[in-house]
Structures are given as C-alpha cells and as structure tokens.
Length: 102
Image (tube, rainbow, N blue to C red; front, side):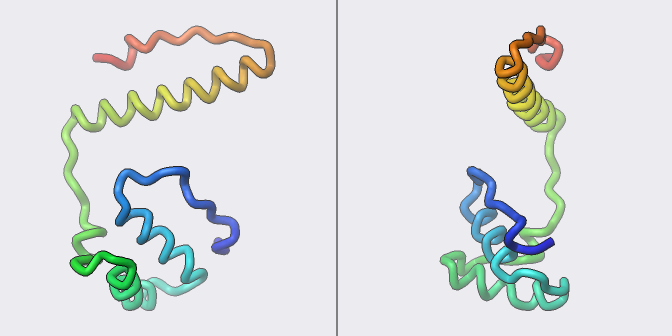
C-alpha cells in the first residue's frame, strides 16, 4: 500500500496513536525489521520520550462491557451512515437501538 493511498482518520482518541500512524505512513514502503528499528526514535523525536514499541504493540485486555460499548458506538455510527445514504435516496429504515443495549 502506498502512503498516498492511506488517508489520516478524522480523529484519534490518543495523540500517540496519531503520531505512530503518521510516522509509519511517512516512512512509506518499508520492511518490518527496519520499521521496528526506526519507529521508536521517530516517535520519541515527535514528543513522546517514553515511547516503548513493545508495550505499544502488546495486546491489551478489555472487558465485556468495553466490547459492548464499542460495538454499540460503532453500530450507531454505521446506522447513522446508512440512514444518511437512504435519506439521500429517499428511503427509510427502522432500527431499534434497544437490541444493542443489553
């Protein structure tokens, strides 16, 4: 994937994630060994002196409640996007958010 085809998401919850994304994107096509070698210094130079790549890439445990919340948020965004498209097309859908609030 070329860096030109990879757009920056509208927002990041964590500024560190944005910087990591921008640095990876800025390096373009690069093999994983070189990426792992260069990324920590580049992120540190962007204002994150305590950046630890291994910690950043480590799996993070989440609770069922966090997973449920994330699904509800993402489904809400998806439904909103579908409704917008259908409004533009003159259609209507019925969606019951209670199905996702268990």
